[in-house]
Image 1: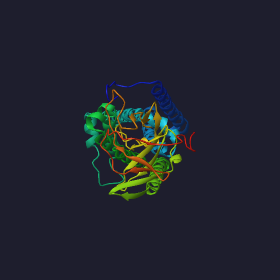
Image 2 (image 1 turned 90 degrees about the horizontal axis):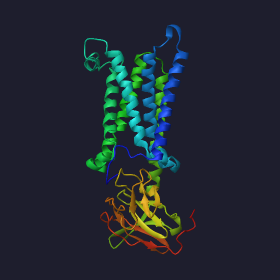
Image 3 (image 1 turned 120 degrees about the vertical axis):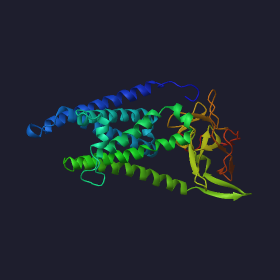
Length: 358
C-alpha cells in the first residue's frame, strides 16, 4: 500500500469481514424496529420514521463502542487481532450509519419549515446554559463531523501524506467524538423523558470501554517496570531474559529508561531487536511474528527485515534497530536506537528453538 494505492485493497478476509458487519447492522436495525413496534403500541406507539432514526442512532453508538473495544481486546488477547486488522472498515461503516441517522433526523425535525434545515438546526435552540433544554443535537453534529474527518482520512494515502505520527494524533479524535456522542445520547434521552434505561445502558458501555483501556494500560505498565538494565561504558544494556524466554519466530518486548519499547525477536535462532513501533500506524511489532523471514505487524501486516529494519522491496519503509548480545547466558539489548535501516548483526543461539518452542 505504500507503493501503490487503490480505493479499497480488497481481499477475501476483508470481504468476509464487511459482509458479516453489514449483516450485523441490518439485523440490529430490523430487531430494533420490530421490538419497538411490539413494545410501544396504541397511544404510546412510535412512528416508523422515528423508530428508524432511533435504530440508526443506537446502531452507530453500539458500533462505536465495538470499534473502541477492539484495540484493548487485541492487546489483551491475540485472538482478537483478526478483528483489529480491518477495524478501519468498521469505523467507516460506523460513520455511514451515523450519517444516515443525522440526515434523517435533520430532515424529519427541521425539514418541513421555510428555514433551511441546517440553519434551523443551528439556530432553533440556543439555550446553552440550561441543562434541561441544552441543544443536544449540536453535540451529535459535532461528533458526526469528527467521524467524517476520520472516515475521509482513513485510507493509507492520508497516512503517508500526513505522516504516521500526525495521522495517529488526528485519529485519536475518535475519543472526542465518542464523548460528544455519549453526551448527545444521554442529554437527548433525559430531555425527551424516555426514562433512565437508555442513559444507563450508554453509561454501562462507557464503563466497559474505560475498563478495557485501563486494564490494558495497567498490564503494559507492569510489564514495562519489569525491564532491568545495566550501564557499561556509557551504554545502557537491558536484560531481556534467557534465550529460551524468546519464542521461536516471535518476540519479547522490553522498555528503555526513557519509556520506549523494544521488540526482541528470535528469527530461527538469530536474536535481533527493533523498535516496537510500526512505521505504518504505530502498531506493536513485538506482538507480531516473523512470516516469510520478515517481522510482520499484527495490526495491518506491514513487514520489516529483522537484521536491518527495512521493509522488503519494493517497499521503502525503515524502522530503528538495536544492538543485541548474549552475555552470561542472558540476552541483552542496547537501549540506544540506531538510525532506521541500520544493519545490525544478530546474536546467534546454540539451540534456536529453545524450551518455549511451539
